[in-house]
Image 1 (cartoon, rainbow, N blue to C red):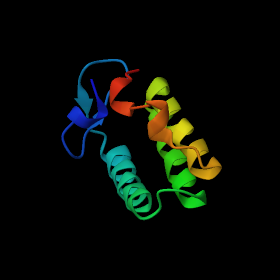
Image 2 (image 1 turned 60 degrees about the vertical axis):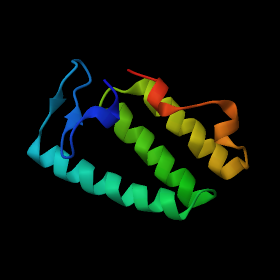
Image 3 (image 1 turned 120 degrees about the horizontal axis):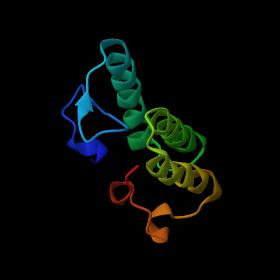
Image 4 (image 1 turned 135 degrees about the vertical axis):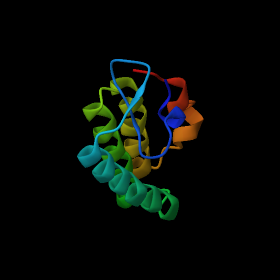
Length: 97
């Protein structure tokens, strides 16, 4: 299951093919991911972009999506090192936990 297949407000369950609703976690993760999305749209390179990508990677690891988190770790490194992350062919939608 891809992260994008869960409806808004639901999170992918790391050990099944379904989505779960946890009232306390969903609201906090949803709010944080919305803020991160704003940062990623406004800063494509530099420290803020790196922070947004590494934080997203941390969230994914907490959910058990370690391989998908590795993509965001690479994007975080690329954002501060000047590497074009797209040139490496890394696409988070291709990876599943």
